[in-house]
Amino acid sequence: MRHRVHGRRLNRDAAHRKALRQNMIADLLCHGKIVTTEAKARTIRPAAEKMITLAKRGIANGKENPVLEVHARRLAASRLPRYRVTRDDDGAREQVDVVKHLFSEIAPRYAERPGGYTRMVKMGKRPGDNADMAVLMLVDNEE
Image (cartoon, rainbow, N blue to C red; front, side, top):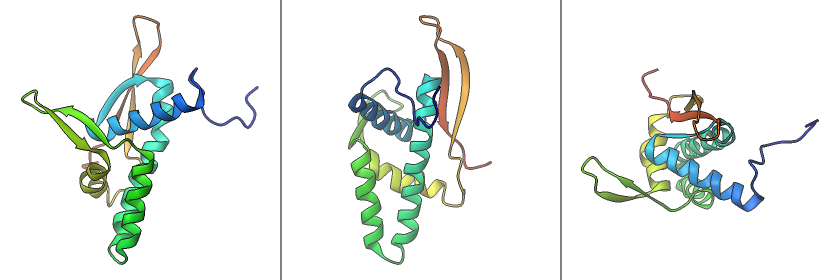
């Protein structure tokens, strides 16, 4: 029985789980969507939404006191990797600063939205090991 047991272990030790969570959240924020197993998607979804909420509150509170925005940026920087390498439309590689991208592009997009920034869509089974797969994506602002 799993009484009062919080979180999923994902067959990894604590440091590996932390690194996995940080890297997958950074990929989600940079790319807008990731394809992963359903268990990993369910694990990182609340943490990703908390990062977006942290950035939103930092921006809102930073208008009256800039120190609070700096504090929120430092908290986000301590919980996320610094850079992600992405490919643009031409196939060229570019380095994205994850925290800057979060605060300048993602958080303002959801400024009026009270929550629910991500959507998980189940894809079925993976052929190799029959694992349940899912797409975790940032929702569009039009809804």
